Image (cartoon, rainbow, N blue to C red; front, side, top):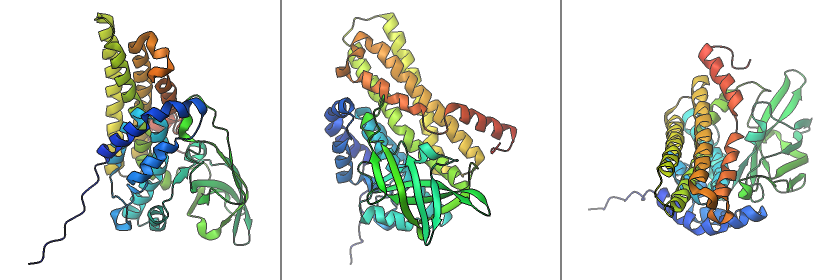
Length: 378
């Protein structure tokens, strides 16, 4: 009798993340101190197969779920927020492409196969573009010439493709945003070393400058009216932000552990217990909001209502993570002010949670419009 072929064992990404976190923790402070990219973290992630984890198994990827990778990103984020956040930027592009292939029949299989075959690392400019986009596309024979400067491009120093967009002033339709993947190396592309910032210093989120880069017609993956909500952005909102905010929850979890270690060296004090209780409440709020983000990413249907709820969770998770780390600083006391404890770095890193779209005020406007059944495009 022929033996049945055994199915390959599913990867335990939580265990792998714990191993990686242990490897990179000692490097985090050094990269923070000199604004250098987290090379050790990315090397460990690549060796573990993390960059292909979300690619469907049909294309040779790991077939991981968004929830599995979010748990991994939280663990890594507790050790090094920069490694986790830069990895999340690659991961959310892959996750969106995989969802669109599976649920919409979108022709994203080519990109997914390339991620595996060519070991691509993807970079996003979405946070600096969003609905209006930036940069210009000039129509030329066979394609366009791209002139743009894209900020917040995490991982750009080691990335292969920038998932981005720019504006083409169409003579018939007016300003249209064209979406495409642009190479990060070659003539017409340069990286401007601008990433001198408060926190998440190791993400390598430098500016990418395009000076007349040729983008062929075949590379244009889609187009939409400038400044208007499009189904693509409802898909992105539904899926991407669970991955992007996992590192921040992880930073807060790491800050909690450090704070409790410091508090354990102090005398028993009712006020200390209350501060710890406040920290625990804030962290639970972040975890609960993020858990809902994962549920939305894995089971939601894209559209304005889903986008509104995902963005509400983004605001709640981000603010709760910021508050939890602030409370961790209080719990840690004066020792928390020293860089060697890691709390000061966590406090700075978590502040970046404020700046991803939709920021709180635009989120409130969107959520209010959805609840009132108003036009979300204003």
